[in-house]
Length: 68
Image (tube, rainbow, N blue to C red; front, side, top):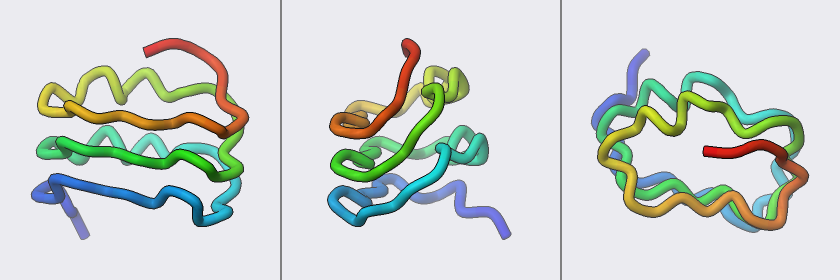
């Protein structure tokens, strides 16, 4: 199932752990992505830089490394 028409995803302060899924890069219409205040770890997926409509990206207060 594809969710390409999603424009906003806010999952902040949910105590979610693990790595960020590469499939986030498939959300072509995403404008807002807030995943702050969770327990994500690993590197920031480079595919997030391909989301041309993305205006708000908040990955703060996780254990992520890397650059966008």
